[in-house]
Length: 264
Image (cartoon, rainbow, N blue to C red):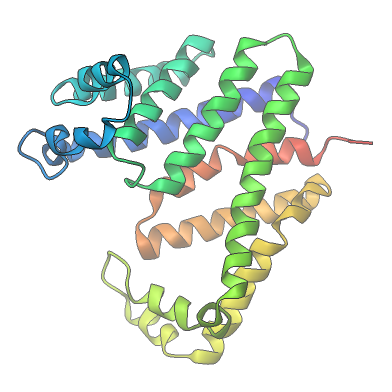
């Protein structure tokens, strides 16, 4: 399947808009936690931003205090909804700015990896939308997203490879029994088989370390992407990490496109 550069950019934009809608909807659902009476109230967190200059602190007070932060979230979900239908630099800038504000509001710990990938994708998309006539800029933006995606897997694999508990399978066994949802008897039985856990752990490690090979050609890339999506779905089922599926999913078209580019 061949995708043009513009089609790929549009696909990435539509998918990241879906991810942003999901992320923002979750925040609306827990709005009481960041109200003035909540555990994440701005009055508690604002002291950590005292190192910013006065105008920046004023802007953060204006946008991150409750209930103003609800307006930011509403603007974010509105921009994402419109971005599902049309492409424009103003929409992408709005999504990027509100995403950065969300990261600041939650100090990057709401769901760090997915927030990071969301910002990475939006930053590259904004640059591409600012120079819509430049094929080179568009290609560079897709390559940036693809390399960030590759490094996320490769670094995770290297870190696991260095840890004895991952090589032995003990870490995976612990994760399987520590999800936020009740553990099924099947998973619990699976976690009690050391040899099987070790085999699966090494499969995950090798998959992540070898992920950069997906750039070799589009057939290999498609195989890695399908495997990665299945990996994300498994994480959603076992650990409730649904935001990773959508944030990383928005980056896969960029990787697929770059895997078909002749760099010689």
